[in-house]
Amino acid sequence: MTLAPPVDEAAPVIGGQLATFWLDGDLYGVEVAHVQEVLRSQGLTRVPLAPTAVAGLINLRGQVVTAIELRERLGRPPRPEGTDAVVIVVRLHGEAVSLLVDAIADVVDVDPSDFEAPPDTLDGSARELIRGAFKLRGQLLLALDVHKAVSA
Image 1 (cartoon, rainbow, N blue to C red):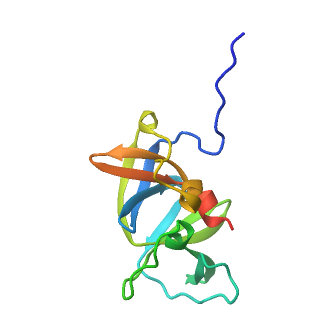
Image 2 (image 1 turned 180 degrees about the vertical axis):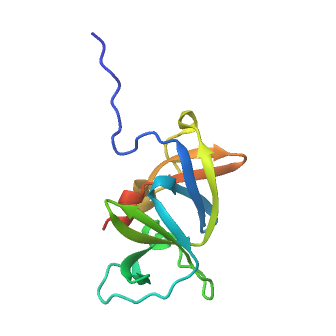
């Protein structure tokens, strides 16, 4: 009797379409199925005593949506003064949450056979939030675990 190799439930292989975005010079992607919409910079209402990754609240056509600063969640430096974030609204378990990123990129098709473990150069909070990576024409695409990115 042979035993199957252990499966890492935390980072299942993904494939299909990823909506990609730039953050501090790196390319990230989230599954298109989670993306509700992409918006230009929105007015934020700060939340007193909120965790540092919670940038504030956004009024999205009457719905109050929490805005998560991905630079903070991924341990990156703050966005340069005078540059506006792009808002990616994702829907998880029926709830909308917005992710603040530097710029939106393309929707790309990725093959599950090209899925690799997160790079060894990632450490700390970034490593915990990245499911894996894809190599695209000279560019590394980091697959963000959107569920972990929006949780505390």
